Length: 152
Length: 61
Image 1 (cartoon, each protein chain N blue to C red):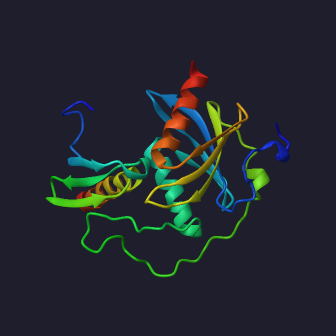
Image 2 (tube, rainbow over the protein chains, first blue to last red):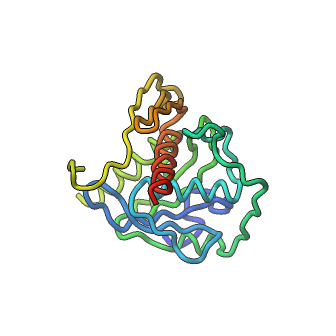
């Protein structure tokens, strides 16, 4: 399991993330998020926080670039802060994938951000299972079902 | 969420008009601010509501 060659996912992707789900209280997942640009885990208390953190990471590293700009209720849309300095990679991918969640570990690679949503694949570490998703709803459903399955 | 337990954060009326690309398209109205915007996916809808609530929080602080 620990061998890198066992992973059925492209672990050299610069935007590789490791979602470690530690809790599943009242159908709300919480846990830690690991990526290459920060040594400490990013904690999330619910799925919205998880999405916010992941989107923010992709925007900062500009990968994968979004094909659309997110709309907002404001008249001018999102504030444009100009060119952003991309963060440097501080943790290699093979370290990112080492962490494990108490309820489930999902090594995820979002390949595209088309149609204002995500397309990519996720690897459920505990079950050695690869799952593809074509949008955010599908991704959330897959993680939710996997975590629920672990509880049952 | 139980009524009266905490201050109302915001009211959003969501109208889903399409289900293209396996996700949702439609419009969302922020009732308190009387603003309506169209969304192209569930992700965009979540981000718009999240941002609106952040804005609301900043205004009330």
